[in-house]
Every structure is written in C-alpha cells, then in structure tokens.
Image (tube, rainbow over all chains, first blue to last red; front, side):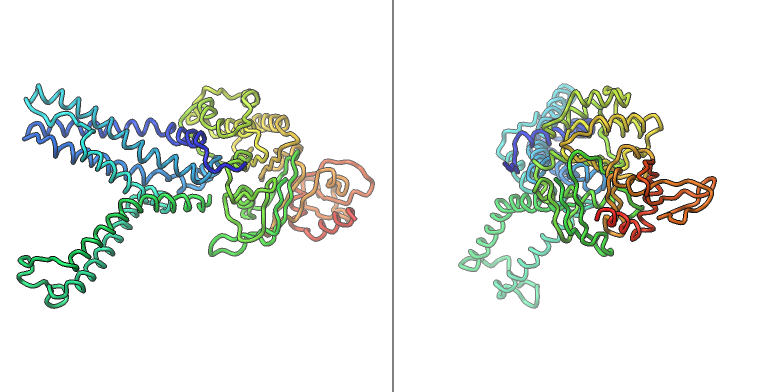
Length: 256
Length: 279
C-alpha cells in the first residue's frame, strides 16, 4: 500500500535534519542568549521598561533568527551531491517538507522561548542585585507574546517556501519578493483610493489642504475597511497554507 | 525488474543527451555501466532513480515509475555517488541515523562489510580520508539490502588493497533479489565482477552483453602483427592487442578497456557480430 505520509518516517527525517546540525544550532542559540543577557544588563542601566524591552528583543530573536533558519532549511538543494543525497532519502515530498516545517516553525518557537527565558532569567538575577533594577523575567504567557508567535508561524511559511524555491541567497530573495508584493499591494491600494476618494484629491496624488479635517464615513469608507479586512484575512488564514502547498509541490519537482 | 523504454532527455538549452533509450535490468546481476566522459552515465542513473525528470518515454521499477518518488520505492533504492557528503559523526552514529529509513537494513552485514574494509565504526567520518569514507558509505549502501543499488565510481579514491577488499565485499553482497549497477571508468578494478557489460554512447546503449556472450564471440589476441580478422586492434607493448572473432570456442579473458574501445569505435561491426551469432 502506498503511504505518502507516515508520522514515524517524519520523526526519523526530523532526527536526520536536526542531529548533524545540533552543534551549530546550540552555538547559535548560545550566542543569541548571550546577546539577550548583555542587552538585559545594558537596559538595566537605563529605565528598564520590561514590557517594551522583552517585546522587541524577543521579537527580534524570534523573527530574525527564525527567518534566517527557515531560509536555510533546504540549503542542501543548492549543492548537486548533497541535494541528490537528500532527495534520495526515503520520504515523500510532503513528509520531507513537514519535517522541516515543524523544525523551523514550532521547533524554532520552542527553542527561542527557552533560550530567551533562560537568558533573561539569568540577566534579571544578575542585574537586580547589581543595579537595583532590571526589565524582569520574560513571561511567555502574555497575549502579546502568543500573537507575536502566531504572526511568526504565519510569515515564516514564506521564508521556508523561499528556501526551496530559490537556489541561492534565499533569505535576501524572499525579502525582496515580499517587498515587491507589498509595494504592488500598496500601489493597487493607492490607485483604488485615488479613484474611490477622488473628491479628496487635487491633481494626481495631492490631497486637499483640509483633508485631515474631513470626517470620512459612509459606504466608501466601509468598503475600504472591508477591503482591509479581506487582505488581513488572506494574510492570516490563507497565506501560510498556500505557501505550504506550493512548497511541497516545488520540493517534489526539484531535480538533483 | 527495471524497464527503461524510449527515454529521451535533454538538459535545458542543451542538445538531447538521450533519444529513445531502452534498457532492461534484471535482479541477480551486477551491471557495469561504461561510457566516455560526458556520455551521460550519471544522468542515466539519476533518471533511473527519479532524481531527474525525463522528457519522454517510461521507466518502471517493479512496475512503479521512480518519478513519483514514492517512499516505498525509495526504500528500495540507494545511490552511492562518487563524492558523498558526510555529516560530522561516527560511522555507527551514521548507521543509527539513516538505517531506520531502510526497513531491510542488515546490521550483521554492515558489521561484516566494515570488517572486510578494515574500518572502525567508532571513527568520525569527518576525520577519515576520502578512501576510508568511501568504504564506510559503500558498507552502508550494501547493508541497506535495497533492490537497486547504484555505485558511481566506487573504486575511485581507493588504494590497491582497498580495491581488492571492495571486490570481495561486493561479490559477497550480491544476491538474486538485487540489481547492482556500477558506473565506472576503472574497468580493470572490476573486470571479474561486473556482468553484463553495458556501454553507453551517443545517447544510446550500444552494447549490453554478458561476459559469457562476449567470450564466446570474441577472443583477445596479443602479438607482433595486427590480425587480419581483427574486429578492433590497437597498438600495445610488443605489437598489437586485438579482439578477434572466437571461431574455435576457446576461452580467454577479455580486456574491458579494449572491449570498450572496440564497441565505441567499431559499433556497427560489433553489433553485427553479436546479432549474427544471436540469430
């Protein structure tokens, strides 16, 4: 019987993906922890606003580190010999993609949470007696933290797809592609707004002098809000599954 | 077991490499795949394993198209390429990592092959020489017990004693359920092991015959003069080395390098000789 998805095989593939990289990964996380620890001490010299410090520092670790890791997930496909070896491993494209997806999404979130929590706990333990204040220990249970994690899980799917789609420099090319899409959406939005709110403009794109004093209500404004909601819905609920599916397809089409 | 029919393939923006290529492989044999540099040996092997997508034709391994890359089929195939990347771990750790992907992995066989190669399973693969790494990977490949095992230039990088070890180990690992394809330029290393001999040239299999068929039709002649009935001859020390028709049913060893040159230079004559005898 043909099986294109075996959970036990996914686990074996995840072990295969993780084990050889363990030293590099731990070194990277240690470095990140060191940076977070150092920043904790530096911040403790100042006003030590824990909410904004942890929000921004953890976000940087999660997003920047996660995007880089995701962009490198399928780096062996850039090398003929390593790519051949990987593609020959018994496992469907779905299994191989799911294995790397789990490691770079949930796996990275767990690694980032643990690393950052430990680093900040140590930082707080050192900073408090030393400086009399500190940003405090990072609490991963806040609503903002989980919203941040949710946004990471959605957006990292694009970088994982970029890793399998682009042969080289996947991170930079994925960022460039994302910027291109964003600029395209912005341009379309600008043109739509220019047309829908023509009475607020003079000339091509110059708004009327008192446009900020105008109260914008009614069906036109509601349609703008509806459009915004539609884009947000697509981003939140459609983009990740879309990238997962096209990523699997792309991996299945990759040649050695 | 492996059926290649009318396969055509070309790399993007390059002239066709294969045009209506046919090849049939049966289990219980060690195929020697010979060909010039750039003839497409590695490409053919990649097509065979579904690692490249053909432009036309069909390939079936036990009835399954390898392009589907089904895990059940991939568990029955292993490609030991000429230069294989190795992770920073010992051979035994490598076995622990990869063996679970091959359901019929033979632990006892793996130990036996490593002993045959005089290789220590506790040694780190990154610290090994190229030849030692190769032997470790060959041992692993043989131990997977896959139905199709492809070895691309397996003796490249091996010293003379290691080549002898490889011949002994490979001879012991071959069985009736397995197809082993050895792609090589080092024909002398594997002369007594590969059978049948398959020669790839100009996008086609121009020669595929067993050693018995070859020795029943051709005989090696070495002498000061070029024989008049030579199918192919080239200058050698002391005169000429030639392949002549075996008219008296004598047995002689066949020089595979000479055979290769004969098949690629005198393709039509060789085809006619073997076709005539077959009919």
